[in-house]
Image 1: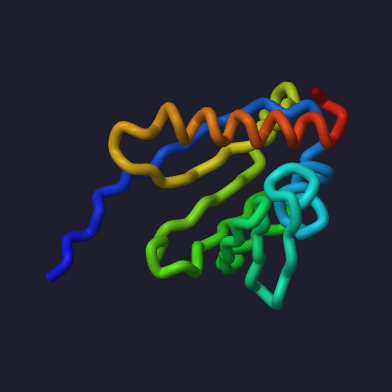
Image 2: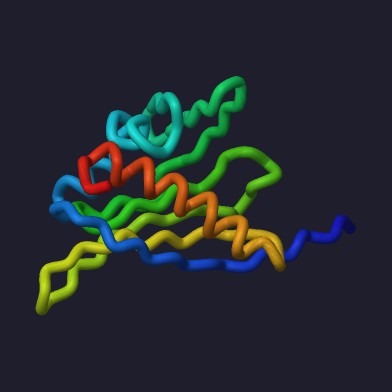
Length: 131
């Protein structure tokens, strides 16, 4: 029996200076995701195909909560069961908006995973004019 690699769940929160509605459009649509997450994003039903240069990865949209969250599960066999989730958190007192990301990484790679998401979120903030 093949050993499963151990992975750990990580969660990151990034303050975003924009409306929750705009942020939701940027995380839930192929058009929005293509502005910051990947160079090109195509959809085939619930399957999103992400392009980075010559690389291509597919993920199925498995959860969608209007104006709140999206969850994608990678379709590649090496990613079975792996998902990433982006949700919007709005502070009730200040109305500050944050993007909360749940992802998975190999043990000891949390810092690298954070840097990857930090770079992507920086692109997101630039795309919405919040940088």
